[in-house]
Length: 480
Ligand code: ADP
Ligand code: ASP
Ligand code: MG
Image 1 (cartoon, rainbow, N blue to C red):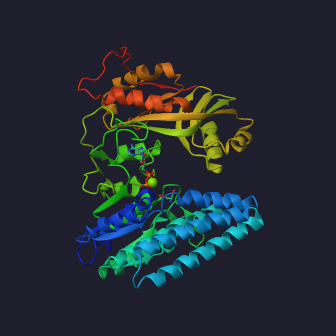
Image 2: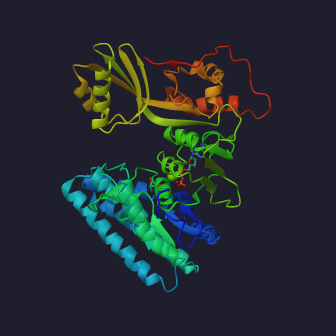
Image 3: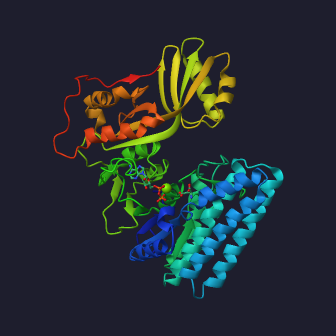
């Protein structure tokens, strides 16, 4: 922590509290969120909110409709969003704050409608326009939640996140410019905290230095919470969501999933990277850098302990959690000459140039096997690499991943995994370089079954785990 970033001049500890869309679904949910914030007033809460549940997807649909010339359908969609916010205001904000809230909501909706008109006129809904449009979800929800808090007697102050979080211009998934962001967050928030106000910011939204709207990528409000926490040297970051914490598997896939009480920053980061939607993958890096514990908690059961993410995992299990990343593609790159650093850097450069991030990579003498999250850029990458390599890919794959701090000390886990899923036509099995992960590729249709089988094996209901796993004992990475 550099000098000047005090835990507030008042000496009190800041807690950043992020509420996801699922925790802001309706008036009851917002009342619950308000009560949770009020239970933290002995600290100095800073509140970060997502858009209300489903709003970001609706905005995306509206933009796509407008770009295809269906302006009427697009406007109907955003009007239904407007009505939903006004109805919530009718239930939650009836006092002195209401005229101001109405003015803000109307102003945002006028801007939203005029943006849809220009999308229709230009037929262009590129990532830049998309970021601008999607940001309205958080702009609206943050106004509503700030007013709801105020109505309940909390001295809340709405803060324009786009004016504080400064990013590069990688639309769709922008990265923060840390120095400018820290400075602006401190300038905006410290005076409010000094006056005992509760700042409320929209998550996910940001802007470039010249003020063009950007976003931090889908699910990015978690990342906003961590950015704010790091800038304020918060005592803790709380991610309030719709599950009891980070679990041994997605409870929607595996009903036997159990809450993990404690896990390390590294484990949680791997889990998020490999598809566990409960946290945006970038969330842990600022928290780890400033050593701020992150708590994942259930807004439906605020008394629960949730998951605490910190420096050390206090967990003796071989596997901490199992996750799955869907809709990935397996890319095979057949090199026209033997692999060397020049060829590798050309391959990396092509993927980087087209913004295609690589999740897993395996190499052999003349072949690279990659797993990527999107095929959109692959035709262009293949064209760029013509003369160096032939690029082929297959869609409809899922990457199943086991994560655990203890995997590195228990290499036999890899062979147990192999035994559990070998009949499922597993394509690439790889122990990650961090040795904290073992991942493999299956057809999407087999993803759920893989997770359940592995969960049964590593988190059995009875005490004694299955033990006849065939005796293969080395960790392995088989690619191509
Ligand atoms: P929010 O709206 O609060 O941001 P998200 O839908 O983004 O909520 O994330 C919460 C969801 O993440 C859960 O409902 C759950 O289905 C999913 N999830 C995936 N993997 C896990 C996991 N390992 N532990 C807990 N939840 C998980
Ligand atoms: N509202 C955004 C999304 O749905 C960001 C978030 O929820 O974190 O992706
Ligand atoms: Mg989320």
